[in-house]
Image 1 (cartoon, rainbow, N blue to C red):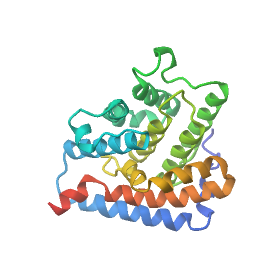
Image 2: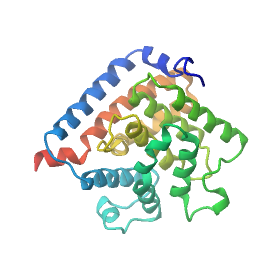
Image 3: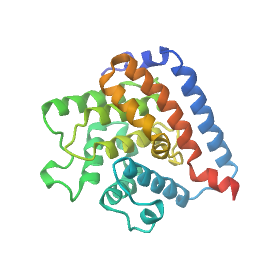
Image 4: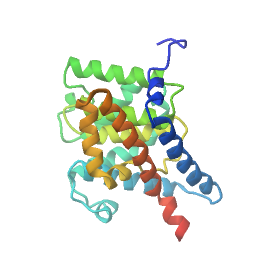
Length: 246
């Protein structure tokens, strides 16, 4: 994709309500992060955000472990998979800007380690899945003008809907969403917890993902409107909110 190619996601901002919904979600996140600037934050705050995200993502994948159990390292296998992925997530942000296909493969390899044979880790299910992954990578590389929140929502839905890997597609999709926010500079310390936003809105999350997969343009539109709401909920789930009330 050349530098002069049009942004492949720019047209989404013209859908009714999308631009204003994402501007409002971005404003809410910016307020939280600006407040963050008035207090010193630590790596422990980022670690807590990642932990909360891992717990929420695992719960959406069927884990029954509590946040306390996950924090104490006593979560079930699904929670351990999500936690292992979250521990390595931020180190992949620079690579996402240039080699998203390699990042997708690494996300799956981390999440599915121990669940699949080594030769299947990070590998798409078939040629159709490989082509879909290349398409998602092209969207990321080409969407330099579209707001990061919109890009993150689309990458999440594309990965979840296409299920390109043999397992752990939901966990990979939610991790990729968070990683886009970091790599695009919107939330470099990864203090927003989008996974917790989705868990708080679980019924809407699951129904809108189905709509994205099966509902054509109307499904895409509905997912994007939902996504703005979920990002706002993810900002409210940040550990910074708890610190502000301590």
